[in-house]
Each structure stands twice: as structure tokens, then as C-alpha cells.
Length: 251
Image (cartoon, rainbow, N blue to C red; front, top):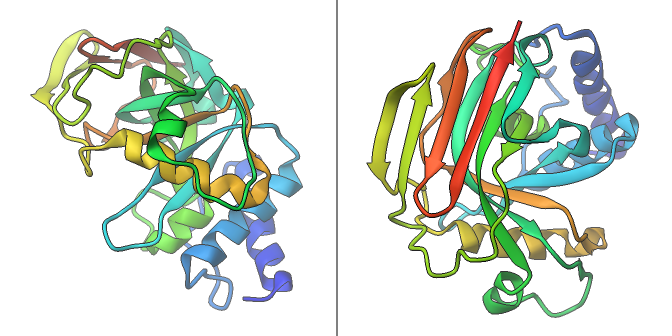
């Protein structure tokens, strides 16, 4: 995909963000066919919007290329948070473990090690707010979702803690509530069992962009699956030993 097509695809996604009209898909010829093309469209969207990048959502599927989505600083909020449903009409939620980089990890030729990355991270419980620029039932590919920053609408974070390295994040107890009622309670559930490993991949993915900055956040995959709520609903997530986050989708 050449730069002209990347920019055309990005312009469609930027317009969808601004007019809030859901898309049924990107036009033929503008659909990304590789992870690199999906990232290139993301980056073109980011350049066009001109918003500060506050963090990322990331995943590192086994035997596949790691991928990431951009989260804009204006959509990252401390818990408890009133999030206008008009900004994220799909009202999707996922309970996740997120990390904040206390120090910058600038670009360098040698990849950062797991211990180097872990040493500069604090952790928190988080609710990723899901809102796609595509319709919920649109027949789109995973690479189109990637071009749209993997359907990110925002992030709500508990207080950060530096005392997390003794926790078994692979089997940590997680509880999801909706309107005060327990919707899910289980141990573990992260798709890889290793959110820290995802944060390490993210730090190294972003090296070519200058490196992650102190204060940026990475959220590392859902423990709870994706649940769609509605305006007026209140969602809470608790990770035992890590904290709790709450979001209210205000009308």
C-alpha cells in the first residue's frame, strides 16, 4: 500500500471519528493487508488528528507479529470516571492490567530486556472503553480493526502502584461488575497469561518512533472479554492486589 492509499484510508477513519457515523468497512484497495499497513494507517490518523499520544493498547499473539493501537491522552481518565456515552456509543468494556512508564525508554539499536522494562513500570487495574469507527456488526477484518487502533475509545485507570512484581498476573483474581452486580469473577484470563511480556513488546515496537515517553500507558489485553453496555450503566473491575477502576457511561 503506497502513501497515497494510506492517507486516503486514514482520512476516512478521521472523518468517522469526527462525524460519529459508523463505517461498514474500508473501500476495496484501501484495506490494510499486513500489520505494518495497519500501523501505517493508524499513524496517519494520529498525524491528522494532531492529538497527544497518551498510551497504547498492545498484543503479542503467539507466532504472529506484535501489534498496537494508539490511545490519545484526552481519552485516558482516572477512576472513578463519568464517560459521556455520546462519545463512545457502543459502550464496550474490557477489564485489563495496564502499566505506566515512569521513565522514558528512548530509541536504541538493542531491544530492551524484560527486566529493563519492568524496572520502569508501575501497574494498575484498568477498564478499556471500546468504541469502533466501524459498526458493531460490520464485516471487517482484524487488520481493518488494527487500522482503527483496535477499536479503542478510551481508558480508565485505578491508582498506579509500584508494588506489583510479586503478583502472579497470569492467575490474578479479577471481578467485573455491572450496575453493582457481579457479572464475572475468575482467576486469570489474560489471553497470553503475561501482560508484562506485552508491555515489553510495546516498548520495543515503539523504539523506531523515538521510544516510549515517561507518563505513557500501555494496556495489555483483556481478562474479561468484551462486553457491550448501554448509556447509564456503571462498570467496575477489580484485580486482587492491584486495585479497582469504575466507569459510568453518562447520558
